[in-house]
Length: 407
Image (cartoon, rainbow, N blue to C red; front, top):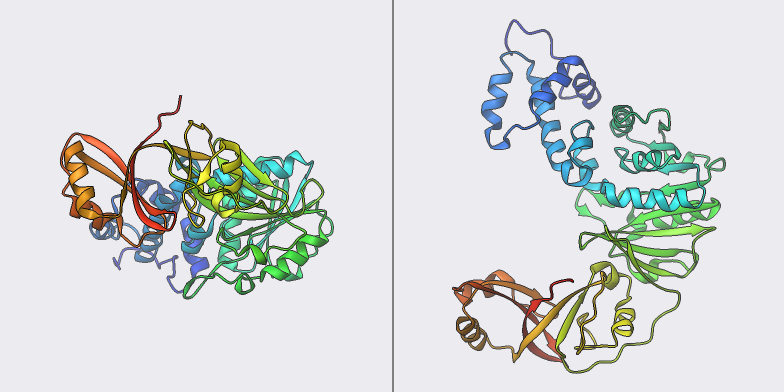
């Protein structure tokens, strides 16, 4: 360290001290300077900054700058560059659009106070507060709780968000209109797929939800349907076509046993209050439909089949087909021009004949890797196409077509 610099306030061995140093005027100025820094130039940047700042503070600021850049995708630049993050917090935080949607569902039912258990860095608490809801945000990790408190203050919401460091299993939620639980779904070895291995387990979270007037539990979208109890309304949420989460809703205003898919930003929904009958299966028609991932996760493909008057191309594949165009936010439509048995040489010849230089590869029920297929096709030409590698009536099949432009 430069001999003219004071003792390092950002002790790397003390995460709370390092975080406190970032909130000093010197730390804030350093973070502002690093807002648009290039990670590829980080070594040179660190060397330069250590001439005027302590090594610990520079290291903490560079780490926080990296996290803020990653967080922009979830929180938007306006919030991300005012907030603070931990590595796990960025990974597990809810995307702002999804958190806002959930908060609005609560607010629409007259909820005015929520106990946010396992609050993380405070993303959901922020969305609830912005919906006018008073929030008790609880997390047992000291650094995470400090980060959540700092984020509420940074966004002007500290009067609506009380942050408490505690074990969520010891919190009395009886005075709140609703409970929100977001169990940790990552461990030392990565993602946790068993809901009973969440922290806290799904069974505990469900019991806490059933004691509250209303509640929401955030869970992984791949949760087995048999793990969902009969008391919950289960909702799968996608944003921009990507499935983000599943939520179990409990209490007044929600329908126990209902399965629901919600698509953001359009907020199109699809619901079923009972298991749907198996949809018909038939030949490929003029149009092929790819249901949104939330629809597939919610097991509501049969509802799409019914609405479009179509059929599945195979009883095990979530591709829907019919002969007349069906326009819906819940599906992406393609006009099919060719159907071929799976054969690489025939596909290559067809693409060469059509002068296809840009190929989108989609697959369901096929082991072929899209990048490998594109490489073997040696694409050349001014046109674009989409190929579906799938099964039709049990047989490996290639369907070629184009996306239908929405009116």
